[in-house]
Image 1 (cartoon, rainbow, N blue to C red):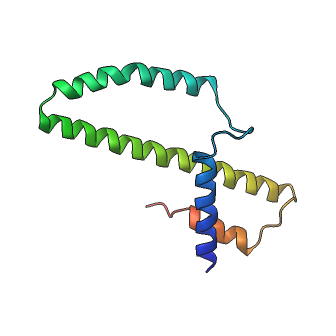
Image 2 (cartoon, rainbow, N blue to C red):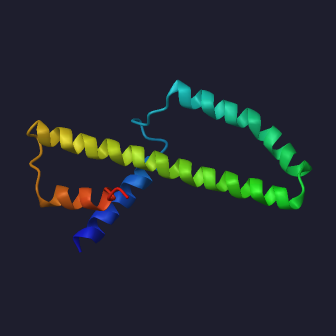
Image 3 (cartoon, one colour):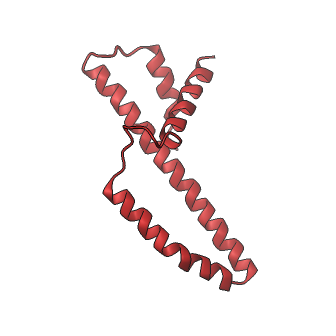
Length: 115
């Protein structure tokens, strides 16, 4: 049951990070805006390459781009969750939060054993 609760917390944080883009506390860096513009500038070139490629090559390129997008999303999600965990640990270290079973359970759902 506890794992279900913490999975719901994780899902809530994902929604907060990804969907609530109109909130006042949204971080929007100059570097992100510049990267977004560079991506937009290259989009036309990408589309032209796709049109000019053979169908087999188009599928390989599209599959790669989709895998890259999925990896990028998960990498951002990991960084976001790492920041949340670091904040909780800092609050525990400062005595604001008392580490307990709940925190251990949350960390257990977020931290995967190294292989």
